[in-house]
Length: 163
Image (cartoon, rainbow, N blue to C red; front, side, top):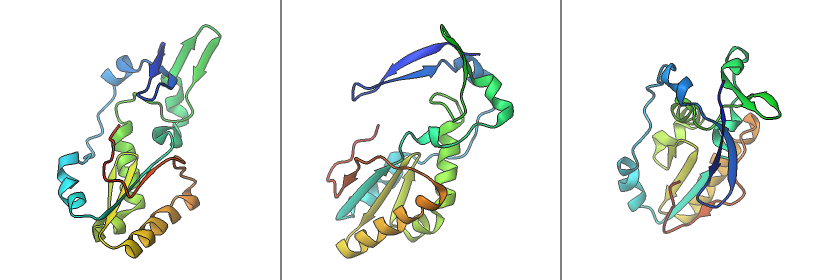
């Protein structure tokens, strides 16, 4: 069981989370590689158009296995709650989400017009018409698997903020 922690984000919004440090000490690390931002900056530097699409509450879009829910209980003054979605702060969440996203978009990554950084899909190109098609292709894969994106994303940005 974990104790509740209130996390305040850079935009001032808050989220109630569980303090999962003790559980993480006993959790086997997922060694799936997460790309380092400098590794794909060369690709983005050559692009004329860049779009960053962020998955809405990324980890919370993946369910927790039934037998793991008891490990993710939060003791709160109003009772005991169990996560049914992957919580923020669990050790293997970033690698697991990276793996899932790369399985959804293998062709796009291989063709060289998309990079995935955990819950961010970055589409880049030199030609506007291609860029529009790439965005459409990327977004078309979200609906069938019920993956949701933030309504506010960065399209044609000259600068992308990494949070």
